[in-house]
Image (cartoon, rainbow, N blue to C red; front, side, top):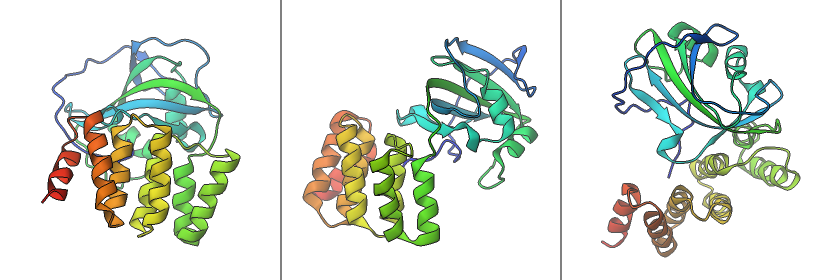
Length: 250
């Protein structure tokens, strides 16, 4: 199943209204602690594994990692200084809600692309699961290599990064890399990547769904059906897997 980065914007309704908290981050954004954490916090030399959810000022959730049940990795030094300062208040195990003025958010995002937001602010819930060593995001490196050097060299880079452990590849990142190659029509490479993700996360419905899609594009309906079925067994609410299984039986 294709995943979207937390910075891609998908809208569904969220009825909750938010109160304005009294605490502020070092750069002046209001925030509240939904659940306190403990231990060393984040700094510019950290990697962060988070669950997060972004909503606009009307309470509409724009994207949420909770929807797919897969956390997101972020290298702090890749973030704008404003986000680095804001996230410095977080500690492992804690959950926080940031109230970010819209103008500040757009500037901190460093891009206006794909933003369609309403209201004077956004609300960003961040749950810091773990502080990690500061490795670059492997999916970003592979995407850059595809653009600059083509898929053959990019796949060599992917294998090298995996061997030497110099980049971070969690479930989210590996899935992104698999789709990068699938979009290039490189089904063999994408199947190898998605298969590795399934081995590492055998209980992930999303990992099986993605592998099924790659097998289907490769023309292997039997393997596609097997992994769609596994995905549906793991997540009975996966309507994509249900629909694809029905289609394969036609």
